[in-house]
Amino acid sequence: MPRLPRDLDGTELARDLRKLGYMVVRQTGSHMRLSCEAPKDGHHVTIPAHSPLKIGTLNGILDDVAAFHSMTKEELVDLLFS
Image (cartoon, rainbow, N blue to C red; front, side, top):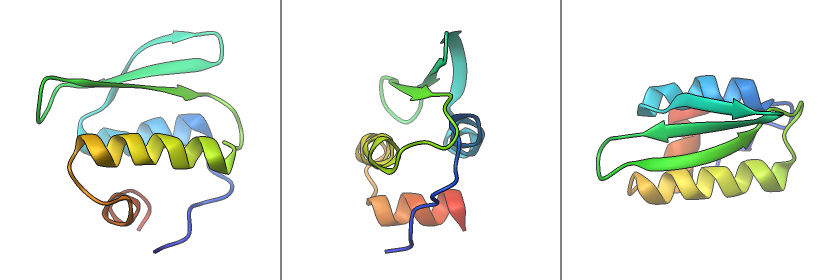
């Protein structure tokens, strides 16, 4: 599996997730709420706008997004960060 980036901040992750159709729908304090309508009924994920994201937080977000899009986390990491 490709290594997860260690210096990624929340804003960069939100920008990278646009490749999968996510968009920021609101921001409250230091947390951004992203939504994606495709391919199913919709998916929401909250990303802290911290710099850098803690690796466990990033891992959890990527697990959630990969599961929703029916792909492995490895495929998602390749798509977003390669």
